[in-house]
Image (cartoon, rainbow, N blue to C red; front, side, top):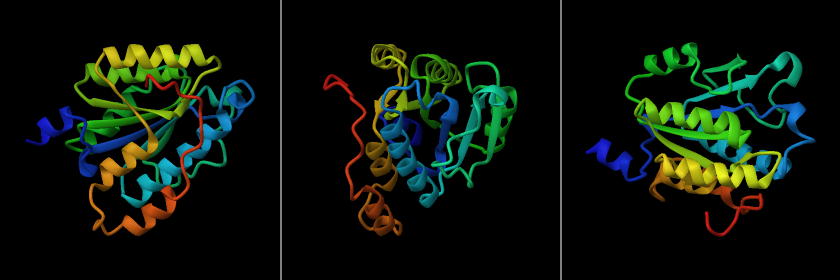
Length: 199
């Protein structure tokens, strides 16, 4: 039954992992909608922390590209892993995920959408995970690259979603103990990142 629910796009908190891909300082000047994307990502991370969703983050070649941006609170992350390959599916990350038990759903966000995010999503789909790509928490230098990546990701079976959709799928009920705290996080609408209506 749980497997069937996850195939329908449900998110079960105890079977979900957040993956934050390479939102680093050196990318800031080059990425379209970088600032609003970071704002939305911070909301999602705070909600994940409140709902006790495990988080793994990566930094692409941090010696040259810098660390994760300071606006993002990743203090609760299970690890922040440096990498040179584009996909987040590093052996050490896959090992960490295996240690976590029966995870079924990956919530993926970061940059660049058409490079590291897309390759990460494809790898996790190939490993049997349900992958939710958070569109308003992703960025590329060109909008066309980002949006075409969303099209390709949808075709391989990913859910293209938004930060608030993820939050409310995890929350599920107004009577959830964390509802009031989450309500404060979502009281302000998500920042506009130029998503097309077709998404």
